[in-house]
Image 1 (cartoon, helix red, strand yellow):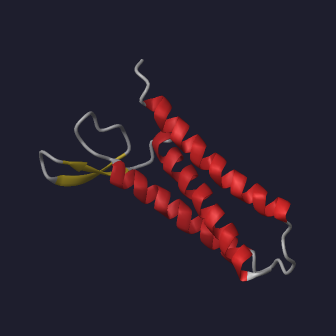
Image 2 (cartoon, rainbow, N blue to C red; image 1 turned 180 degrees about the horizontal axis):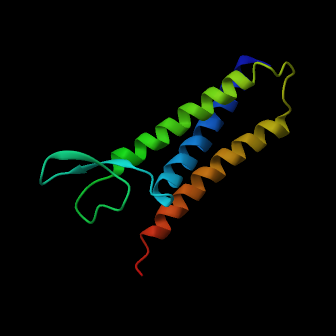
Image 3 (cartoon, rainbow, N blue to C red; image 1 turned 135 degrees about the vertical axis):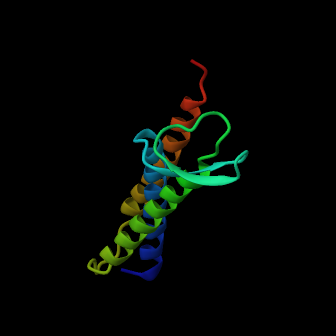
Length: 115
């Protein structure tokens, strides 16, 4: 497999891994680092902190971890595949990456909807 295809697939996997981990950390209420600005301290919380504390950094760290894991998995997994991929397979990987990003955006946009 050419190196540019491995890099492309790893980038697509990183986007899918980031979107999945970022969304699932919020949906599954995984523990996240949360900053409390009035107290000027960090805590590890799994429940929603309320309107003032910021848990974005913890959510972003989950997403970053998912991106690194997925990219590394695909990068080293592609070493086993010797043949060049078709354009259809590359387009499919890119489509999955864009769809996962759109899904994550739609999930968080839906959470902003007033109920």
